[in-house]
Amino acid sequence: MYKIQLTDIFFVDRDYSRNHPHMLHRHENVLELLYIADDSGRYIIGNYEYAVTAGDFVICNANIPHGEDPFQEHHIQTYCLVLSGATFDVAENERPIISLGKDNAIGALLPKLYHMFHKQTGYSEVCRHFALGIYFFLQRKFLERTANPRQLKRERLVYKILDYLNEHYAENLSLDRISEQFFISKSNLSHYFKKETGLSPIQYIMQRRIGEAQSLLVETPLPIQEIEFRLGFNDSAHFSKMFKKYVGVAPNEYRKHFAERRRR
Image (tube, rainbow, N blue to C red; front, side, top):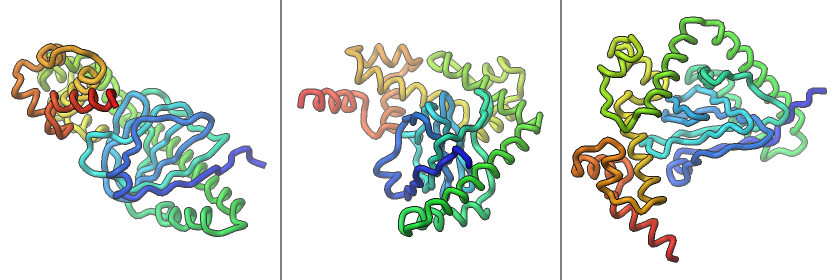
C-alpha cells in the first residue's frame, strides 16, 4: 500500500483570487500540485518568481514558501491537489513547473475529481488512486524535461541573473550592464528572462524596489526621500509615480494607512 495520501483538493476561481490573493506561505509535511486552469499570471516559489499559464502544474514541496505575486494584474483560476507522503526532487536552480498545454486530459479530469472528492461519499479511495496517477505522470514528465540539457542551461542562467538582480536591484542597472555581466546579448537576456518570470529584467528590478519601499515605509521611520535614495531613485516624482502605479496609492498615503491601523 502506498504511503502517499490525498488529503484535500482546492478550487479557487478568478474572482476569489482577485479579492483574496494567497500571498507567500508554506505548508509542513504536504506536497501541493497547483494546476493553472485558466488565465495566466506570476507565481512565487522559494526565492524566484515564474510566469504561469493555463495547463501548467506548479510544484510546491513541503516547507517551500510559495504564493501569488501581489503586483500582478491578472488573477488565475486554480485546482490544488494536496498530498502527504509525497515530494518532488527539485534542485534549487530548476524550474518547478510542468507545462502540459491548455487542453490536456488531466485538466479536464480535475473538475470531476474535485466534485467527487467533496460532493460524493464513498469515493475517497478512487480519488486517491486518480491523484496517485497524476502524481506519477508528473514525475515522469519532470524527469523527461530535466533530461534536456539546453533547457536546463537556460533555466540556470535565469536563476543566476535573478540572484544578481536581487543583490544589486538598488543600483543603476541597465540591460547593457546585465548582459555584459552574463556574456549574453540583450535580446536573449530579455527573451529568456521573460519566458521564465513573465517580466522583463527592468520590470523585475522595479518591482523589487517597490516591494522593498513598502517594507521600509511600514517598518521604519525613515524619511521618504531617504528611502528613495536607498533604492536607487534619483527623482522623487518618478518614485511616487512608480509606487502609485504598482501599489495604487502614493508613498505617504501608504505609510499613513498602516500607521492608522496600528493605532486602532
